[in-house]
Length: 462
Ligand code: ARG
Image 1: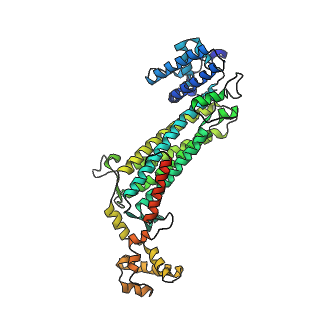
Image 2: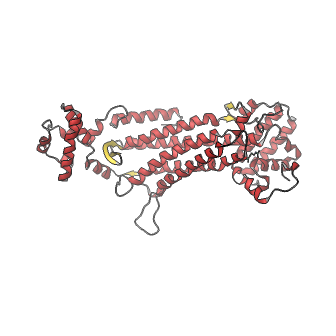
Image 3: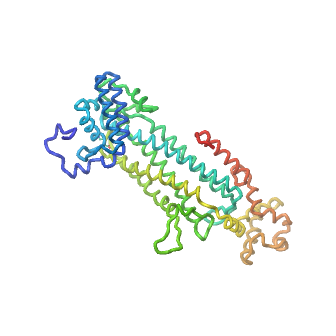
């Protein structure tokens, strides 16, 4: 017998039963559902809506269910549709008809919304923690490699040399904003919908504040229809998650490039790579590629829910059941990606011989040579042209700028003096960029210190 079977004379079509059931995936909310029910029944007792004795019996029954669930001894059935009705059935089986009093003043509509808020509140906080760990890893990696210079790129063409740490800290900036975005989303995840009933509130003298306090929510939804139909908090989470994945994906793309023979800037640890079934020499950056690939599915979940919501009239509609699988998958994908990514960064080695060679054998000090002439009084536009011609000359001769003789330099401009060679020494070039946020070592150290302060404020030990 269905919990709602009263007004029906025929059994549900089998395929309909399967089609409408959510138990296969919403059983993941069992712990939250029980937690919510415990708070609800406590309130029902405290407000005298049901006798205290009954409330106590129900609480004990719920705790028993919790124990059984944790021990894997709670069978769920498709016939009971979702986690809410499966649990209610089990409660009644456990303690008898008094279990039927639990659903007083409540609907599955506010119940499921509550479960989602409880679930996401814990998960978003955990994910923020994983992001903080990743920032820690990047900061540590930066500190360990302050002497490493790599080519900085624009248009994927070598542009100006930068500290590897400057590159890492650019990502730390993205992940810091990701933490802040999750923390901001948490303000709206941390809102309690319970007490909205099916859509209009309830005739019973419930105390919503008491329930919110019991469950640790900071705020209540002020409108019952908003409470049961709002899924903005999930959208915000999916959107923040999509941005995190995008950041990871960009970094992964760089790791794939950097670990190739062509770049050779880093070597990923064996533990984070896989081989080829046919080519014995291969060591593939599968983890980086898969994180990049999985970014697509997280974007998909965001778009899927946006689309589910766009045409929905108030208040609850069964379409809303489609909010769950994408959210669960996003949580899982993000969690695994963040853990693996941090491990991959932590264990990779920088191939200093290759980074050093890369910055010696290119033209990325050309801007500095132009700046040099500017300091000698030449207008920048003219300096730009002189150096452009010098670069062309080098290309024709198969040389780099430091290889040219002083006489050759003089042939291009009489403003050149012997100190030009120091001006294009790659370490000097990097150090010269001491502007706030620039790649000079002091500026990078300041950035590191600022992350350490921020991590301490976030409760991390640094
Ligand atoms: N399984 C449903 C969901 O996930 C629970 C709410 C059902 N409410 C209803 N009126 N059918 O959305």
